[in-house]
Image (cartoon, rainbow, N blue to C red; front, top):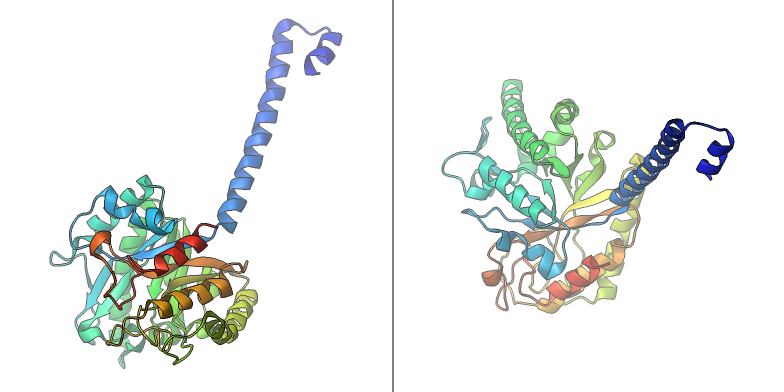
Length: 355
């Protein structure tokens, strides 16, 4: 069509070619823009089907990083570079020689690279372990000087790994995990920290609030996702049915949708999961404290969770707690802890992660 019109105008062959190719260039450019918009919309609607990848003690291979994808069809992993607080003190220790390989900067960087080479996307989610296992949400200081020292140390830790996340193009970065008292009593620090992270990191940001904390966080509007560690207490039944568990989840579902609408942000389950033991949904946040192995209780809890949340548009997805790099020896038929590895619940997860 372009050629016929231009011939009628008696343009020279050179001008004809120039105008023709200019038109083609504009057409191709519009196609590329359309494809870019479509890709962006797809990225926004893509469900995060993730697992929390436990930091390995020594260097791992591609065969070990790919198991979440091949076994349960995960498309994301979250990495947790740990730091340590030796008691109620204001100094955080991280990237030390005595830490496990996967907890340090070197291991975090290498694991991101391995994951991306295998087609997995990544969230970097720094965690802190306080001496004797003290819950992070309870940490507090009475002196302003101690708070300021702790905040300086924490900022150094977070910004260190935010820089690595940017350099290795991790898709999501989490600025903190289950801080409660720190998050509620020192909000100005978190507003400033988020600004500092955004200055060096261009991906999406979240904060991992505990299930009883997320409604009180003041800085959700500064982040891309409302992060929730979804260990909601549900029922004390030994082996609750899927229907019973869905009914118990309903009040939390209503609250989560309300918070999502209030802040106009999607919910990301920064952690969720159930142990393979009886009464696993009574106090899901607890570590294994004995009890009978019960795979039906675990599978029913996962099924109810997915049925309740995974088809909701305000739910971005989430990360199962937890997944070990040594897949062949992880979990199994005598294991009553969190990991779904080598347990019947793997099929439940894979079915939902395949949508």
